[in-house]
Image (cartoon, rainbow, N blue to C red):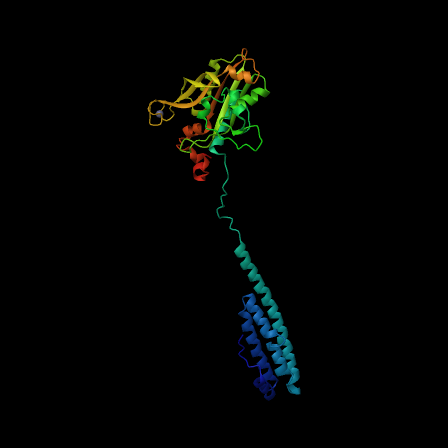
Length: 370
Ligand SMILES: [Zn+2]
C-alpha cells in the first residue's frame, strides 16, 4: 500500500526542526492517509493488507513512527509525539475493527445472495416410473376375469416335459411338440430329470388341478419361451394368459359366453366374436376365436387382410384325457380352457405393429401408455 507521507529520517528532521504545532500537522496528515486507505477497503484481502500495513509489528507504519518519530524525538517534543501517537493508534485500531465487521457483513450478504433460493423458479420434474403396457394389459385381463369369479394362479417358468407336454396330452412323438420350438436346459452330469423353459402357461392348469378339486376357475398370466426368430411378431420370450374352468355342469354355451364377454370388455362393446373349429391336443372340441376387426369394424382392411376378422387365440373344451393325468373323474366333469397372447392383444388394442418395442425399454415408446 503506497504511503504518501515519508515516515522516515527526513520527517524526523522535520520534527526536530519543528514545533508541537508542526507535530500536530504531521499526525493530521497521517490520519488523513489512513482514513483514505481504510475507506477503500472492501474485501477481506484488502482489509488484511490494511491491517498489516498499519499495525504490523515489524514493518507496520505505526511501528515505523514509534522508531523514527518517537524514540529520536527531542525531550521537549517527546510528550506531544507520544500523545499524538497513542491517539492515532487508538483510531487506527478502532477503524480497522470497524472495517473488519463491515467487510464480513458484506461477504455474508454476497454469500446469502449466491445461495438464495428463488421460490418462483419452476421445479425440476423427476421421471416417475409407470406400469409397463404389457403389465397394464394383464391387469385388464385379471380385472375382467376376477369379476367373473376367477382367481389368478401362477407356476414355474422352468418346467419338466411332463407338465409342459405329457400331462397336456402331448406325448413325445406328438407333432404338436414341433410347433413349439423349446429351450431345453443343459442337463448336469448324472441328472435324470430334463428341464425346459415352459412354451405356454398351460402347465399351470395341470399343477392347479393336481392340488385342487373342482370347481376350478383360474387364469394364469405369465412369461413363456420359444426358440422363434425375433421379428415384428415373434420374440424368444412373450406373455400368455391361460384360462381354465372345470366343474360338473359347464357347457360349451358357458364357454362361448365367457369368451364373448371377455372380448367385449377388453376391446369394446362393438366387437363381435367368431368360433372356428380347430385342433389342439388338450381340448376337444377345439375352437379358434376370432374377433371382428377392430381397425375397420369388420368392413375389411389391410390389417385383417380384407376378411373383416382377426384371429385371436385358441381354446376349447378340456379333453377328457387331460383329467386322467390329475385323477379327475372325466365322466362327471367338464370344462374349457384357452390360452391367449398378451403381447398380441396389446398390439391389437393399442395399434402397435412391432412386438420388439415392448422389450427395448425406450421410454419415448413406453410413456405413451402411462
Ligand atoms: Zn380390418
